[in-house]
Image (cartoon, rainbow, N blue to C red; front, side, top):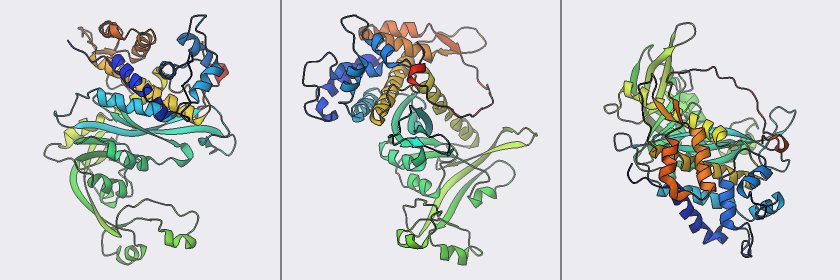
Length: 445
């Protein structure tokens, strides 16, 4: 690439623009008015460069000179003057200024929505306190993200307490931020009549949602034992009386919606399921069923996708390849947590946690923008090569910490020297086990 977009310089420009009106993101108009070693711009850049070490080690890396040393107490006091909205503003501004050039068929933005849990340092006053085990409480945050699969960048983020997790609600909150002509992918656990109808009514939006073959949608349960592609129209009602009196003669679904006027008469165990439409509604979608392999006992393994994509342009084989792209958001979470060090927070307060989360999302997009522009020389080896993202993270942060933004071309060349092979089709058994945040005193040096 002859004229690469210098993502480090773009980030610097956005930070300088933000600092010029920093009082929009501080708790008091007097904040950052006195001459201090830790200015607003220095604070922001220091937090962007933080990795997984203890706070004192991070401060030593940022201020190594004996005349530059900054205490953890001074850093925390200056950080307390900022609001999380400061980093949220930088995050969205960077995404707007870095062009997302990769489009499917030169037309569609391909996005994925998914959530992941982040274990936080223990803070008894945090809104993220959980106690599912009824044994030992802990702090956990559920982060819902919108991810661009082709350009490999995070586009939006909504954090929730694990105890108040609402993934479908987070999707509805992100709808207004989606670009036109988008294809949004979601995994199992997201399908609901309310979400599908909201997506149907959002003009210019296409969706691709993985559904359970034995789920609550009767039309999918009755699919033939083989591949199929059908247009489905589900008649939905919130009237329990109508459902009970007509279910034997009419194919109808009942939404157990929590009407507030019936609140005194309902059990505490009644589920509150969101419904944004009238008493009667017809929800239309296309359902695709295809085989993805075999089970352990040799039987076919089936997958079902709910979509509104046109069947002529996206037949079954292409739907299968398209949904395979959704795995990119899973690997992105892995890189965010373990390559950038987003699981190692340096504070206990909720607002500081949210600042660090957005700081890591920003640096992920900065690194990804650089990696997307680096040249990878392919050899005659058995596998194709790609850039090592973990080393790319270290290299980009090194250049940014040492104010070498002008050497961006050299940075791209250096990125291209650290490669790892792409091994498609690898499978590892998923071992789920509870984890806890690493205590501040047990961070590696």
